[in-house]
Length: 296
Image 1: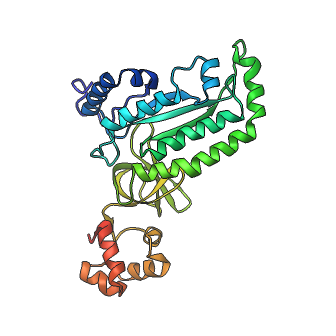
Image 2: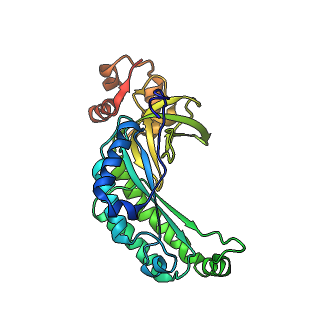
Image 3: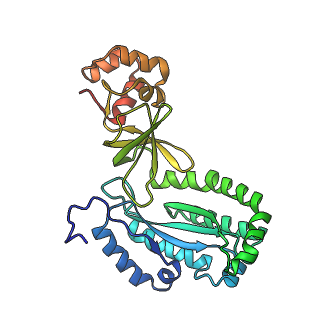
């Protein structure tokens, strides 16, 4: 692929079988190293876990038990956790779960959460957790039972999903993109209210919210300053102090509305010494400088 398209900007894989990776770890490491040599960092190998409940695994002939999933994650983390040029780890697993399968019970949700919690507690990294409900199609074995199971567990599924977003997803984002990480080449796509939303090009891009209405349809670098459940908050990097909107300034931790207005009224700011005088707060000025500002 790289030979025929050497300037390809994004090259990612898709699915991977955790059972196979766990069974053949050394071979899988070699393959992962080859992928990391030629791909774009931020790549995701989507694991079809489907369920961590042994009963559901057996009744639906699934291919990986929880211990296999953990082993496969460890294999990919060993090779792919190194941070690439665009700010993201090279290659991490993503986990797909399906609810409404035969054999599902209230205990299924406990098994699934325990697997995610073990991954988090072991210090491992996964890029995404996809929680879906089965779609029973007429003429299939699932058609007779799937809809009944989904209806029976609808409220449990909602609570489970909320708990995963609050207790797992956000903590995992902090691990994948620590505060101060610079994400390269995020593309500004849309304004919603006073927020600009941007993403890197990729198969499963992380959503970045940037305070303020910035110019759309252009690439920029951002520095991570905060986290949502499945998204991050970033600031343009470097931060062009003489050009960025007041809403962007205001959103910087510790700045607030009054300091943002003071900075805006004092533009153009010529350099660090000028900034110290305007803010009259050495610590706050130093924080802005450390954030990475430009006086252009």
